[in-house]
Image 1 (cartoon, rainbow, N blue to C red):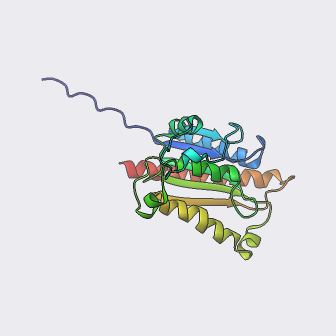
Image 2: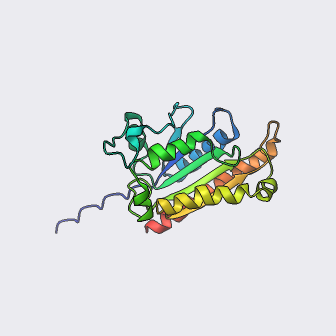
Image 3: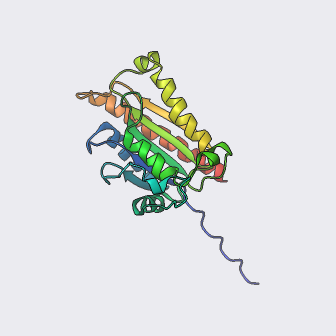
Length: 215
């Protein structure tokens, strides 16, 4: 009797970290590093895109407009899509500046995550080859307190204009947002450790959720 062929091993979930902070020793960089370490310990795949480190150009080109008759991907956009392709989770890590994400990250959404995806496609809830059905988690920091952001309606505006809008536009499976407030120079080490432990906890929880969903 012939033995049945061994089943192919399941593909491990893949996480794409999109880090957007100009300082390599920033708190955001530490968050990215802790998330990466945690995911690697779990056994999932990880890819890190440090936008400032890559000197990513956030400026959308005329030929990259989805409705352009001569639409075409620029080489750097094609390279980014190849790097993050097949990811199950998109991890956005950035500081809140003037109530919004850095322009660098908005440019990444315009040029890469939304490449070739028009307002017609968004309105019609069409399939997005990069994002549809995937999960997104954001880790943000601010120098001011969460209470101040909330009082000025900046927190609600950010969630609605960025998180919720992307969730609807790209038909994401889930969206989560973890914010760290009052991140300033001279922050006590114990607070840094507590914040990074929270990053590890949320990363492990997300990994477990993905694995359960795949069963």
